[in-house]
Image (tube, rainbow, N blue to C red; front, side, top):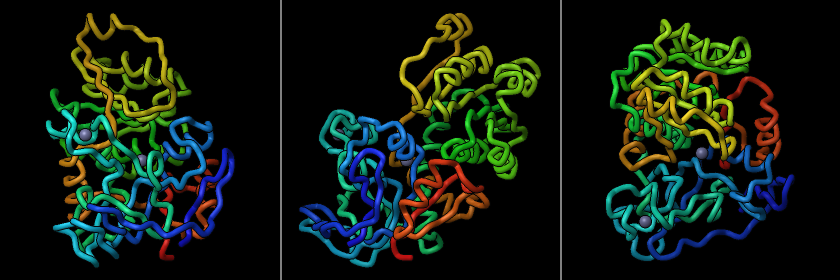
Length: 340
Ligand SMILES: [Zn+2]
Ligand SMILES: [Zn+2]
């Protein structure tokens, strides 16, 4: 079968690879669509130790079950499915508590096991979700990033969300924006240097979108919130600067959720957290409920993927990946379609 292979640092090519064989408890999924994730673009560019070649990347995917391994009750050939990007063990303390996305033995497609930039991939039957007939495979591939956005907002629902600020209008930022609006945020402001992405954020319902290079994030947020700061600040970039500035952008008693992984160590004011009772949480991936909610929202037509998602055939996967890396064109998100 064909796959987009990452054979060595700096290289990507579509080539023939061996057919995967589903093991016990696994099913073989013919991939209908698989999104290129910002974390994959970042890992490739930075030669990250989180994704070491040779590797087939791809973890945001949906498709059709075409073969069953041994012991796979509840799934049939021909089922259209959305696949969780995380494989959990089901046995550790966190899995037993229902926090399967925090599993101590978690594996991620395209990182710890072969990914879905391929025609077919073997996946545990326990992590597939039925995909409603109303949903396309491309929408199925967008369930994972939407579920990430829903998870971010679910971690921060302790305050009324009169004002929310999203830092970064990449795919995750745009999903956080939509999740915040669907979960009852009154006004969402978006901080993003790229003018095309700011325009997309406004089309998706942002009340304001500004360039943080003009006057800084804090001043823009204070103008947006009449000097109070935001009830919730979501950092979907994760640079040292956005993490530091996100603290001052939250109101007293407000909340911050960090999902961006741009850099690790950071210097910030701990007193601003303590003395004004701001609460900070990290967010990683999505829980099973978040994935179910994302599927429901797509099936009900509540998620907007125009005009920011584009598709490309898997055969042109390397070009599409490099174009996404250079942020060429209007697409914020590129989804590969092996069947095309
Ligand atoms: Zn992803
Ligand atoms: Zn586990």
